[in-house]
Image 1 (cartoon, one colour):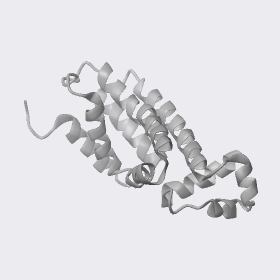
Image 2 (cartoon, rainbow, N blue to C red):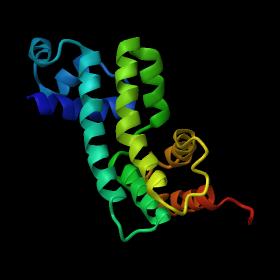
Image 3 (cartoon, helix red, strand yellow):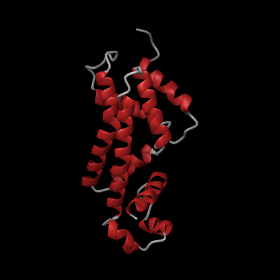
Image 4 (cartoon, rainbow, N blue to C red):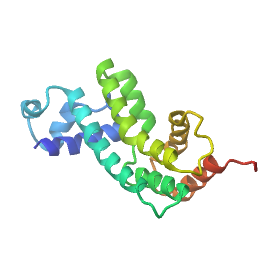
Length: 179
């Protein structure tokens, strides 16, 4: 039942957001009582955290696997990692970030931000750090990857824009001007 609750909650949270999802919606979709839900989780915030924890563990495992491929160029690794996020986790990042900042307790917001930073962002940072082609390592790679996520997040809610996503990554990596 624990995983079934997380499965339903994930679909609802990722499509509607934290605030618009109620525990009643979760229980109705599972055809269980509220006490049955609260047997597994003490409140909605804990359900949300566990959804995010499970998602981030899956994302990190897959991003690290892609980033470890030695036969790919930097661009190919970034492309594959971004396409993975688009195909497997088409979430509304703007909605998710709003939820994290505005709807959750400060402690929970911090915990989820740290999950995102280590699971989503760090694998990209590691790719840039390990690649000898990257010339701007003196720049803040955390900031650079944050800007890359701005580009990627534009295309996460739809899987029919793979070409545009890849073109945008290419533009991000190589710019519009020659050296």
